[in-house]
Image (cartoon, rainbow, N blue to C red; front, side, top):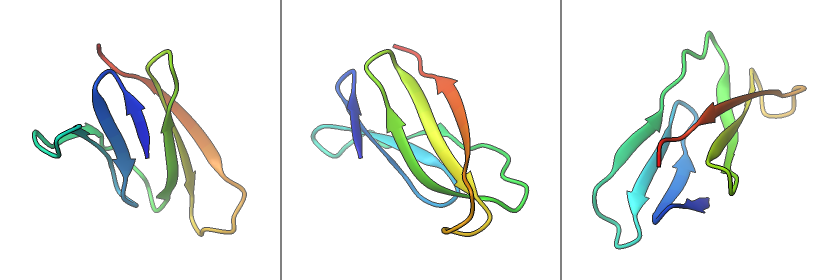
Length: 71
């Protein structure tokens, strides 16, 4: 769970979502093409970069991807 620019960000194994602090206005922040991988973690840093950890299995060596979020 991350907080950035008035919204909470969280991930499932397929996408990253954001929601207002009151729990309303759910949006998809990122739904990448996974090619058999799953998202095992995500974090939004203070610069608005969404970092995601991908792997085929939870214990595999992860692959990291970055995406800039819009303010």
